[in-house]
Amino acid sequence: GQNIDQPTEMTATEGAIVQINCTYQTSGFNGLFWYQQHAGEAPTFLSYNVLDGLEEKGRFSSFLSRSKGYSYLLLKELQMKDSASYLCAVKDSNYQLIWGAGTKLIIKP
Amino acid sequence: DSGVTQTPKHLITATGQRVTLRCSPRSGDLSVYWYQQSLDQGLQFLIQYYNGEERAKGNILERFSAQQFPDLHSELNLSSLELGDSALYFCASSVGRVRETQYFGPGTRLLVL
Image (cartoon, rainbow over all chains, first blue to last red):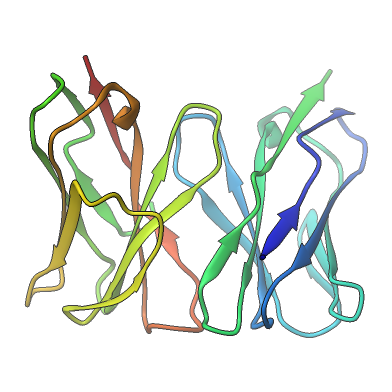
């Protein structure tokens, strides 16, 4: 079956750095997405990786290793507004998005 | 603001009833996706339409149906509602049918009493 694993919950301190990991086993791979979702709101697109390596976008970076079936989202200089769930999703061989359950990130002052 | 609109924002109804949720995709987007998200749960993909035709089906119950109209807006019909259908229903859209990023609407919060 197809599976995406993320930690259920993480806690970090304001101003610090946090890394949210995502491992996947899917039938084929056509890209990996990260979304941010605040409670009760819509997911918003953060990043897309289809080739190995690091993609940097301001305070957020996303890394992909296709051979290891692994990605991480790195958040720097954490702010209270970064408290949210972070969703990892992979497009499989049929170009269907397979979603992880999300990681709830709690930021403490 | 993603450019995807959904109506209504909130809906309260009773068990056994039928409701219709509406979605307008971003300008230029041909694909529409419907998702269900129950409290503290992950996103469950229901169905995708591309340019008026059904493209992919996920975990959509037989009591649920959807369609995409010539103007590309989409409707999700939920019938014989049960308490367990209470959830956030999101619509997303993308330009094409395979590779592109999905952008989400604000969602419709459905409460079945």
